[in-house]
Image (cartoon, rainbow, N blue to C red; front, side):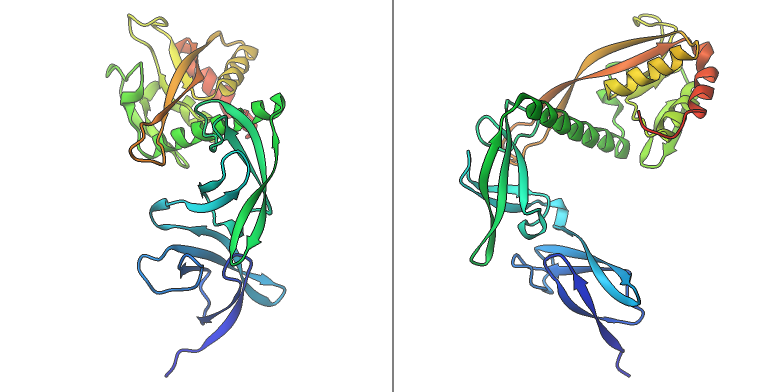
Length: 308
């Protein structure tokens, strides 16, 4: 007996049209495609186009979600004119990107990735040339306000990538103050955040993670020889979150100290023969009396669930 199939429309994305599925229809479809986004059976394909089953009234459809390449390889797009025309990597194929693309540029005309000097924000407009989509240069915004905003956004993206990578694969060798071994370490896990922390301060880290605040390190009591010997500390990757924590404690009568320090990130380059680029940012730490750990935990527990 033949399996019963019927057609469901694919809405949006590079494979818009109809697809035949069997009953019951799967919740998600990942269509294997070649470089021209024609469905293929080769393994591995150039990319997968992902659609999700939805309903418009009583009619089932598959709505476009995203495109993905094997092993997280980037797509490519072509820039026409502008400071540095040519082929560059892109997170999605050209036909799935906006009609106007804003791209931060370094002073050499390449895409700005946080290292080097920023030129400004270049705007490109999507244009179909034959059977290909390309992006033509429109304008360049070199204003100070735009450059500051771009720098902050790019640095935040790099920071988030670094901390997410650390949570996925904790590496305590990066710490300037490594775990001393004097305190019992316990596993803590909240969502995607996980790591081993001192047993005495685990409750504080748990509450911070529940508030969507990232931490780099902590200790329930620093040993002799450290600048803050005898104090508990929490290290934050973002200075603004450390300030928020410091002000929260002091506003509730907990004595604390706040300080910043430099931290260097290594960013891998697209070219495997090119050395990783370095980006120096500030992070911060907050210290307080270990006797106040319970009070700090109670303060955090009563905080509204909104990221500082």
